[in-house]
Image (cartoon, rainbow, N blue to C red; front, top):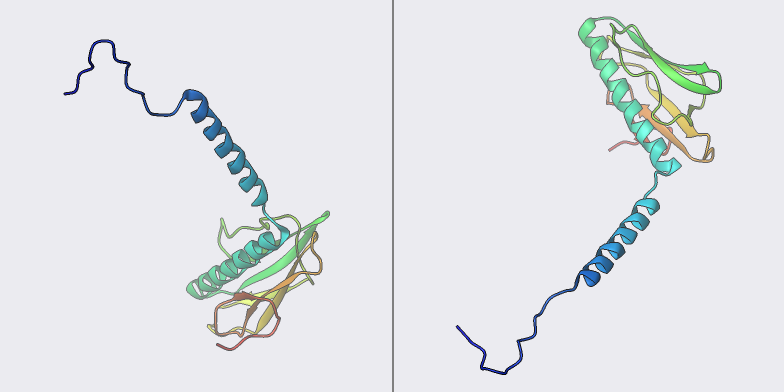
Length: 158
């Protein structure tokens, strides 16, 4: 163990001061706030989320129609200034009836019959957004494969 000789100065203590630590924490907080503001939800990602959700809901309804042995019909509904949808033929509580984003629209009044047969009619459902009417996504199926989201109304072979 080292000892100090009489009359010598104390060794320098190394480390950060409280002020330096507070400045670093403040800079990290400002940077985090900037990143979170730049990652706000855009209309494109909201439309993609609604399209993926619709494809999943249609597949769920299709599976329930096959399991129950009765057809399920998906159709759009217009309520005041917004649009929703309904799955007719499912037992309660059914499936969700509203878009995640109120600005999501279906291009036309569409009805899709799902099941109970494994093969359904080929369908393409066009989704758009009130905030970006030039952007359109399609939820499509060839009648045998699951519904999927794509940028064109025609079924892409893979």
